[in-house]
Length: 145
Image (tube, rainbow, N blue to C red; front, side, top):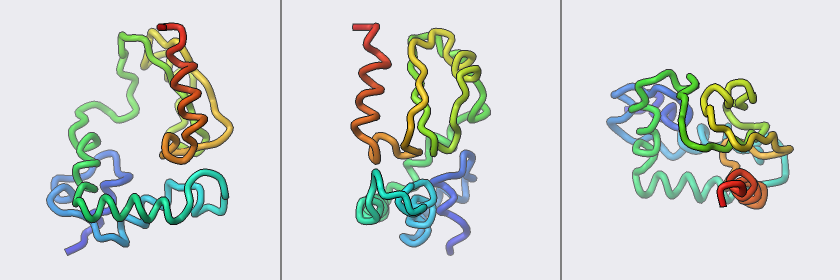
């Protein structure tokens, strides 16, 4: 019985029905590939084999459902500013699902110490652009050292 269980991977509010069983491999691949630049004809970042390896890992370990738990358990509006009171850094990758504008980041993180828009990367930025991501982590928290 496959009733859009793959929506877990991208749906910010999956239903309890979604959390009861794992999506098929083809659904995992479909949902994951929509967030990967390689499937949009862009050569940098991940290869198709990288994405297939990742989907296979989710499927073989039956962890696609648990990876969506964060979305299910969120009681607040997903993109509502949270007012986080500790120092925070925001790196905006252009192909992310939600490219946070600076005005939103400043509301969500009153102690925003770093905000930067990057030239490439998306939802899986740490995976597809590891150099850019690690440079952003260093730059973001350099002032706290």
